[in-house]
Picture (cartoon, rainbow, N blue to C red):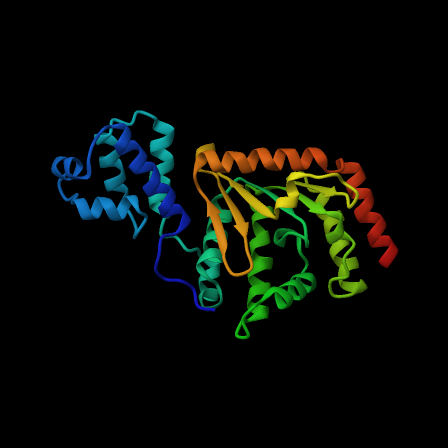
Length: 288
């Protein structure tokens, strides 16, 4: 599975959309901006606003100055997006032949995120998986015969370093009880996986809840999703909705806020932390 070299990354789209929004608020057309700034043509501005290609930091600063943007936090956040918009990563570059655009974006965003909130109804979230469990999931869900399973397992395990870095990612995961009681890989694999959950739940930056099988109708029934939160500004948060053949990034701030509200409702309907840990521990002990 070759990595997609063309097309906008999530960061570039975020940057372009915000710059377009600021231009419209300033009441300026593409032509007016091009006339006001040396080296800024109408086609170039269009490419920037549509996230097609990297954007220079100097261009971002000039545009925001022209738009009279006085929000220093926003300026700082957008400059950071410009610096990292083309950034596809460091350690994962060696896996480029096995990582598609969506996974590359996810890895890059996780590297810069401060928090992850995720609901998963079918299996344990990737950031909490053991290698053996991940291998079984990737084998079963991969729809292409040329997928390098071991490379993707390595990538998934390496992503988990975000949970133990100097400023660790904060993870809040709500997992359906069906995933806790599933037989992925057999009893040995599941026992190891559940033991990993028990261990991770003791970490101060990780919160794990279980949605019980007998729960009434809840927002998680709409499917799995993940929200990535960033330290600069809440309106730069994004949500990921994963599908069988493709993933969908939700980038509009108002839409992301709806997913945040949805997650709040899900965690309110899920079991408390002690009861969740009790279910995981009981199931681990039953199959050990």
